[in-house]
Image (tube, rainbow, N blue to C red; front, side, top):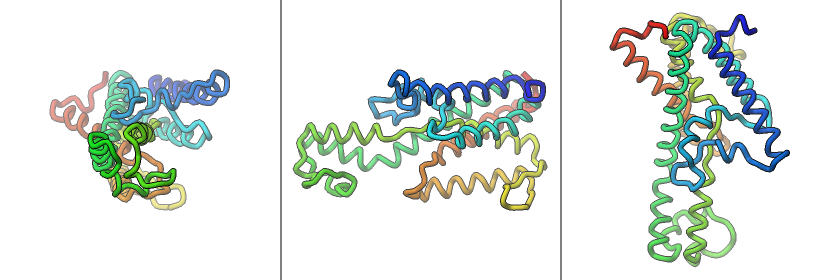
Length: 254
């Protein structure tokens, strides 16, 4: 395996696996919630720290293996080819650039989604009562009208709401790698397991991006996937690819 996978891709896989093991072992042994500590929180939350823009890329759902396995399989499949083309240093820079970009886009999507409610919270705090929150009363439980909430209750509700957002996973960086693969190998055939149709990677990735955009906009209640983070990885991947292409070093190795 070590001889078949280029070193940066191999080490990224190993690091992600180690982080997953830490997520599983540390909470039960020491009572420290690694996801809460290193996962990406909304920037307005008191739990947010700038290092989370990077650390969330190495975390995966500790309740099962599927999240980790699918991401690492994708990194193995596509990251290996891209690293072979670009070299280790260039690939590593690209991986972090797209992963951090995915985190930034996720933060922006949260900011847009929560704007009206955060504004209502701020108004309610300024007025000292919950009247401004009445349009959002269906979101709160506990009995009684939100308009009767005390100032301390409103402040606590706001803090709890802002801390409810969290994102983890290498998917953002992986989607950036997927776009890079499609750009570098546009005619490589790709497909989905349950659909026996193979199509060029450039078309496959374009369709995938549209699907991610649809699910991100639709925002289905049952869907907990960070679709905008996936799109963010692709967006930042496209930015750096176009910059490298403009300056004539897209195919150079580092």
